[in-house]
Image 1: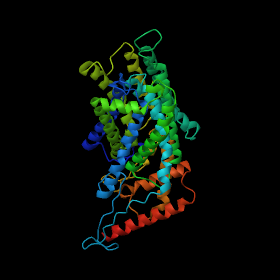
Image 2: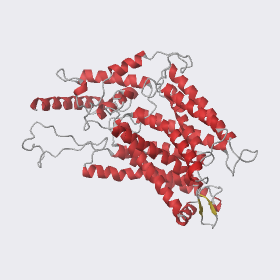
Image 3: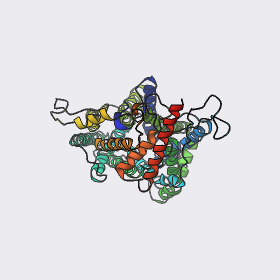
Image 4: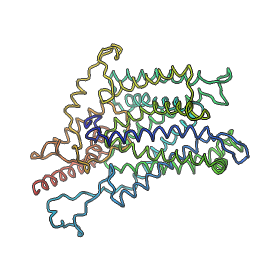
Length: 508
């Protein structure tokens, strides 16, 4: 799995990796389910009327508050030197700086993490705004459709990402990838049909004020905004200065919380709507409903915790396996979300969950097509499907030899078993990595190694490099961002670091 996706850090898929992946899947499923359950729960509001807790903006705020919790974990990791992906802690080899303790001569001292410039904290507000807009639109759409349909429609982001990569980022897609995108379009049509035609109620297509067509459009709009976020992150966030993963997650949550409280809430309170007082969303009514319902507070706590644990575990999945498995994690969620929703309805309570209808067969077909298209798009990585002309390939055949050669020739950035050298794959990067991008970054990797490695260096497979430095440098070489006058400094620092490690090896 090391070379898989070009960005992985793990050395295999053992018991620990499986446990982390499953925990992340459970937490991600909990995010979607608790979100829908909260919208369907009832409580007494400030007007004395018992009604559903249809507060999409409050749920959006809750998501960002949950992400803010990562800041406390970030502080704890630094203060207590807790091992965590993306963090490097200096080893205290002596009480006096510059001297090694007795018996530790020749042991290289771990470098401290570089300081993060102030401008980085403010730059993170941009992806936070993208995420805020996408989440708010999807939450509004979730009011009108079932959570399983919501989860599948969010998979349409791969369609918009592919279009932006090809026409905006100029990262040309292979022909087989367009085949995968086409199948994803078919899946979105099937799932959208299910949402609009499976509504029980009158002939006007509405069920208790719900408009499935509106819900589908809002979720697709949210997926489009999410694809803009991916495009922005891949174009701009690939830079020389990197930040620890928990700090990135926490700062996105911080800026999202600030914008929600001081910008969106005043706007929604002033705009006309169906909430108490004729507003779009009344925060005072939200507070009253939370105070009047202990069950609502408990469910919101589950929602908060599931968001926090999903973000933390997703970082571990990317680190222990790779970014391709992070994308696979998101692809599994429609299955677990829909399956759990059906289980709740038939085995727990009919007040929540989702029942099986005749249109559920169409939705099932749409989900299978979604997986099929995504597997074609992600070829030739793990969990993908190569079109080799067989029946499963619909008799389509494409050449993957150049991509497979790249996989065979590319050495892993992080050697197996070297936990200290394994830094972090930023979440600010599109999970839909195209083969063209990977090929360009691998070519840049080989060129940098050729120029920077001393002639006496050992093979790359045994070199404990800092993969973060290479990852950001390769990304900069490909996107053209973050280079400018900083590239010579990078070369010097990388060269000096390699030489120091070679010298330390000679002393051992």
